[in-house]
Length: 376
Image (cartoon, rainbow, N blue to C red; front, side, top):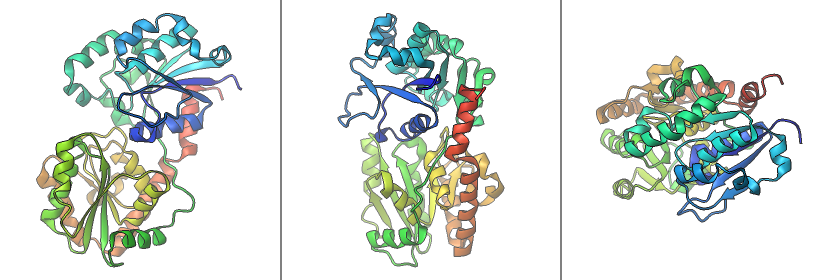
């Protein structure tokens, strides 16, 4: 062990927690770390964290329980002795309280990584509970925190936390496609999976079924616009039963394919095998799927609600759209008929260069170390 060990607290460390899991995994690779998460109701798959705390996920109950140092007896003393900082990923649940309290017990710096949870939009629903949390736990923890780590400048600028600008540090997250992913073979494989010819193109939505991401509106607009030789592949997950049913109602259309989410190598094959990625989200504090798509040379159609959109500003007219209404989505998708194969190839190469330049693991690791271990 070295002298820069960090303990990370997160709500759940498992691929089913999407971008938060991906980001936490990067922290694990970038700096020597231990991870502690919560036993979440409704999830049976095993956690990938070093320790999982069972019991209530309520942050207020957790704050009281963890006010006694003995609560953390499950962490070996040799780990505590070497710990140089506590990192809290996300907010609102018990893990945040644990990070706050343990940093006080060990007298080590506390670092906050909001993962979009401090966007005012998040406080527009479940208002009372979140406001109480902010006053009783969030603000005191922010006062104590040494630094707050945001994935983009836009995420920092929107943050509702006090000291967000003074303590805020920008550390763009990273993506790392497998070395053996090759677009030509993936395109062939995906078309065989869907029963499509080589000439037909695939527009991909890959992400959570959540209203703020506009998956239904994007699908509905695609069906209305009817771009020639294009097919819509929508791969999602989520707990909104009504939204899932509405999306599923389009499954009978010959140019719409609805597929369950995939992970690991298969995810990259679907990304690399498509022709264009779409995400017209209302709010996205980073946009992992966008960065992943770009990293394999897939052009991306994104909204200005995706906070990494400024990286793609050079091709704003062709890749970045102001989406406020469903008509804006229709207008954006109507451009598909105008894109040639050469255009797609050039835009894909542009996106890949953006990802390599800004979202590499090496760059993330160095930026994170500069924040956590500035003298190294």
